[in-house]
Image (spheres, rainbow, N blue to C red):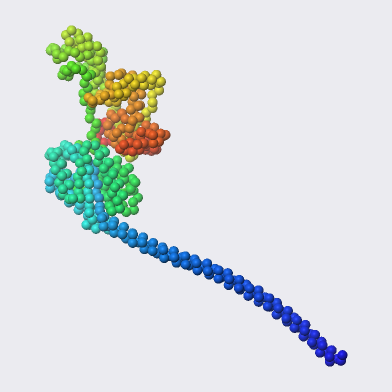
Length: 513
């Protein structure tokens, strides 16, 4: 091979190598491109799946949005209808404890025209408040309910010189009721809890009625309403407005409710014959009588005090009344001012053949005055009591109780010293020892007083809250958990058992401790 051919062969060999290198490079690029294309295809497929899922979600969200928009429209229409109904029949209520919140004297002294004027003044005061402090129109209906014991109220006003006769109060109440169709003066009869229970019930009724925009509660003078008002504290709309007549109780002020006054409608001072609690002291028991006998008792003679146990001839020059069939009696003055008669033998054996009766009168011992204590909520507190020890006395008491009439001892007779009920069928004759009386007193204290925590009787022997408070473990089985009028009468904390006031018998007002 000549030289030229060799050179050409070398050139050709070099070109083949270069071509192979170029081809190899292109092959690698093709593989890279294929991988890139495959990756793009995979991403497109993944995006397509994501788009399909998002489209389904969008369709679901669109359906939900349409549904929610429809529901929102329905709710708005319903709320508008509710608001229309609420405002259509909206009204304002006024609740008055007429036993404590009394109209001004000038209004009461003219029962015919004064009652009409009282209704007009009260309505105008309400309208002025609504116009000044609320967005309610002054044409909103106003319903007034006054609850009072008209008989007791009339007597108190007459004794204080406000009215001339009891009938004036009845005429006033009648004319007040007839002055406007929405106004009522309701006579609830005797019993403080009558007006209280109606006021509490009506307060709850009006507060639950969404149509009632405002409740004017005219009973700030009585701290007993604190419990009834406390559940309604914190109302952002201040639907309950307290109206002060005589100075409001501090416990009611502490509730934080708005308090206003209608000075030209209600009197701002108690009557001259009223106490803070507007409740008279319990009447003294009537004079004791001799045990029941078919013989008519003679007129009561006047006895002179002599040393205990001494028997002296009668110094009266004239003989005593002719009734001679009475047993010997020793008159003993009791601690509460009453008198009991202790009989022994016969009249003849005590007075001799002439029939004169010799009596020994024991000296009266001075006793401390009776008291009633109250906690911060004006609930009556009872002193602690425990079952007296002594198995023999308990057995004796149980035996006598089984033999007693009707299986019960009369509380008034054994614990109060006198039973004034001629129809009482319980045991009165059987004698109880001091230990047995202590057991009976404890037994009486296990029964709730039917006047509940509002009892103002200094001589009450029953309980006004559970004697086991604050650690009663009987639950709903406890007799104090289900009182017919007051429900649960338990005091569940030591703070509730702490006395803050004490009312001493014979005083007009309780004292702070």
